Length: 200
Image (tube, rainbow, N blue to C red):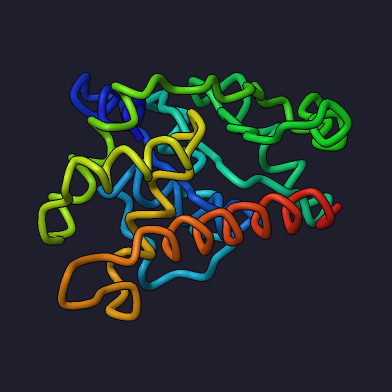
């Protein structure tokens, strides 16, 4: 998300797809990257062509997270984008080397990166920013420390944690149930990773 914000500040057409599971996921990301292209009144195939031409005229970047390929049409479209659009970045956040190999990024003409672990300071800053943006009550220092330690350097874990924290079930009069929030966040992150790997 920090990279996305940096690109936007520089005026680079860009979009982030938190779950890229098909051709429509890529098309929706392109629509966000090129909002000037009106695709509301046209079919999906025509919309993809218009968006491709927009990317061809002005290079941009797509950040595709939780990426899994579900068909040859998706591969073909990504290959068409590669080299015209500035970059199709597939952010692969998996721990095992075997899981990384399963992604076979070269098939898509895309750049695949292993997301580096963030420092505790970076995670605290991210947690504070995202927590505040959701309008959630301020966290005590002890709760912040517990969440940062549970994240173990994974920025995506913090994003998922804040998303879950917006649900009333994690709150009591004394504040958030941090332990339950940590357990559920870990479960969701692991399930998403398993789903991504097994989708192929």
